[in-house]
Image (cartoon, rainbow, N blue to C red; front, side, top):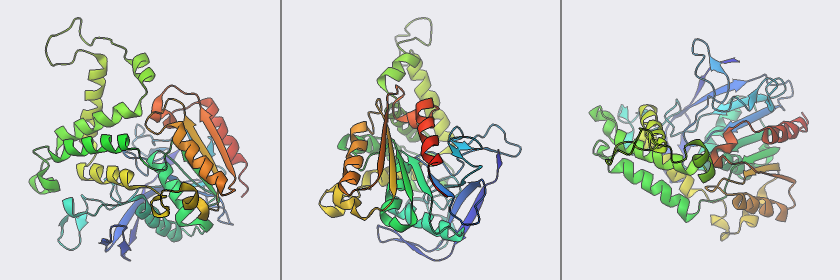
Length: 368
């Protein structure tokens, strides 16, 4: 499936949760399939931390650049683009085409850098709502996402309850635990204490806080995998024939983490990483309801599919069950699937037949 990236520009200011205002902004997006005459078959796919609007397919002349959820979205796949019109939207604050810290600040003519405001999940959903209006979509057949994308799918059902028929929430949590916030803070500190960070204005100096980004990615990657998955894939296997008795790479897991950190630092923006992890930390739909998630979800009108994975210790199945209970308290129609899978948090990206068959069946039952 050959796809094309698009950009939508909005000149009406967007007021953010922080009180800051983006005077104008752009959203990068892709579409797959065709919008039907009734405009009733649109599905919005929301991405997680380090992904983008490139959900599926490849670009002409770049066959190796495969969309991050290509096993899920496409002709004949669980989210079948022969039946649904699928939109992949890049959130604001990103470094993959939407307006973010590396974009030009219209007030100064220079990159926003550290002056780019902190954004929230609610802000992303508000911006996506404008994109939907631009595309002529009044109501989504479904909004779908995993991890941070699942928070957006939840928030769509809360911010725009009449505009979402189904919310598909995968590998999610309704709010981060203290432990999760702690992981994010360690990663941010790694970036902000890098000598090349320069208070977030490193663009002007032509440098990148590579060391901080590498460490941030290594920390994050540890949380995406389960202990069993790490042991099965790497064990205690040595990288070299014997222990070096130094601080080089002895174990395969060390080599893997360094490789992931190095690769990440070549394409991801440090200022974006700071803001996206803060958006994760801030998300808590129950905060305005005294911590009562059931009260927070009272405004939802969509039907829900909630999926979790048993080995996901970062966003455990217990957190998904919190969401399910709160929705049931409000007599919402909820389907819940807990997959016994060993891969950890990243399981939502993989091609597990039980998982994919469930999604295929759920989408197959959505009337258009």
